[in-house]
Image (tube, chains in turn orange, green, cyan, yellow):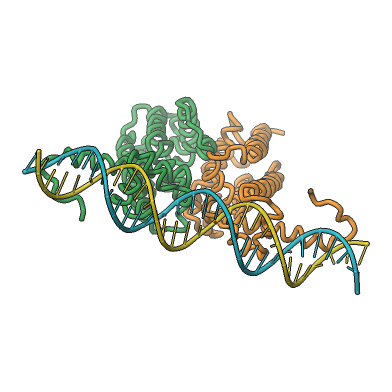
Length: 228
Length: 228
DNA sequence: AAAAAATTAGACACACTTGTCTAATTCGTC
DNA sequence: GACGAATTAGACAAGTGTGTCTAATTTTTT
């Protein structure tokens, strides 16, 4: 039933999966724009450049198509989040600048991009009606990312760069702060400019460091090299 | 055509407006649960305890009903927000405790309540398709509330209770912080417990004051009167 | 080139929803 | 009790969307 018996030439496989991708992509766009009830399979098919029957051949019914879309986007989103998490400044040269750059990366590629927007929107519209649809997201998404980020902050605290009591809370607050200025435009579906992303991250990190930065760093920068 | 010629006895008016309220209320619930496309007028009528025809008599078509619902909820939500804003601790006895209590009030009656949830959800689902539907909310809602809150913080800074450069940014960040821990459960439609609200506000205010509290207060409280 | 598989357009049945209409009924007012 | 307005249940037409089916066509493999 799955993609079987197609080992020798991948020409068809390529177009086959290309169509599959195309359908998922179009479905994501339409679901995101119109919601589940408002989404029209004919429109999805047209937008994907395939016939309606092909959509049904690939994914069964509408519910199933939604599941496939959510699974796909969740996976992409999580992968990108962890990739960005890997660029966390564990050994910062300039803590403020490094955290700002990290925040911008995080916002750009995980929160403000099409997939992030799609997931937020869909979780809010369909999350209550269909909770197990997002069980995977819930499990591997925010939970793991938050604690991973908390671990990074804890390490920065241990190495003397930050002064943090509760790393988990600090991680959540860091994420909340870097999105503070973007919430409203994102809700209204506006496209965020480079300047907005920059300003938001800068504001956020400045406040974050006012709260969690080493007090010594502000008054005596030459005595910064302290702990191992 | 409007509600005219009904001055003498308000019995009928009461039931009339009671039905109107009931319809708006039911419609809000159903729109919120199912989205606009998914909402079913028959279901709204049933949930309001009236016949379908009565719904049409009161509000015309579905689009119109949505407008009425949004207008009603927006008004309620804004009114409540400004009411809570009136309880801001302008002359705090215990700044931390007062801000925590204020944050809890704000979350409880403006953000985590049914109306707040409804507005967020609906703005995200219908805001892009129908922006002028939320023009009123946009104009009188967050914009005014944010600047009003910023003015309060500016006053606290002026009176020496806080150390704030940019009151607007501080206000946005305050709001972001007090919601940091509630975002996820709210997205998933979970009911928030008293403990969660409490902990979220406490965490947020602690961080907010670490960032914007008078530095002097921690080390040398007697030299607090500085700036003019 | 032939066989097998996938895709396509179109028709189709079925269900659902919206918004209107009508006739009967309830309700408040006089 | 009688009148008028509002409400109700139900039928109704029109439109829309889903999911299936078929026959023709294209694409891929042998």
